Length: 147
Image 1 (tube, rainbow, N blue to C red):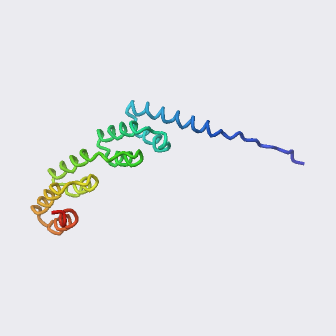
Image 2: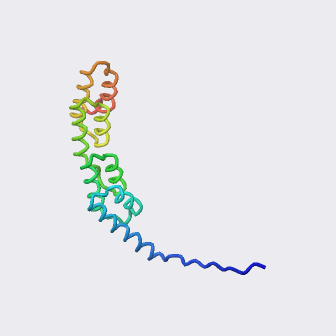
Image 3: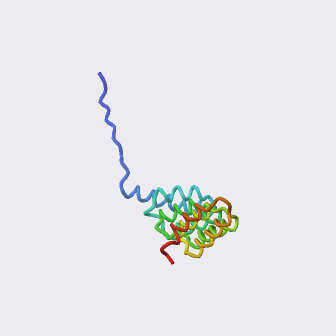
């Protein structure tokens, strides 16, 4: 004979879940203040609707200070912020100076670079041996039809 066991669960009310989520966001702000960006980012991503635009902006700025561009872009997207175009363009310009054309293209595409930057990149590609096809592709994609 098995005894009747009744298990009762006390589900947290909707208000308790909201209170806990708000508490987590508050704690994430403290992590951000102390430079623990990964923890703050992880908590913010779990509670996107509760995170203020200022919190996302602070996170993006701190990520960019550490050259964590991919994470900053993801935070911008999650927080509904515009991409930091000037910073991305500056990074692309730095890569052009170092002749790292693939990284420059990446940053220029993220930031929707202007025709002058694309023209400078095509000039660089034209000066590098064996890059004529790449120069033509960049010109076709970003310069032809914009003049």
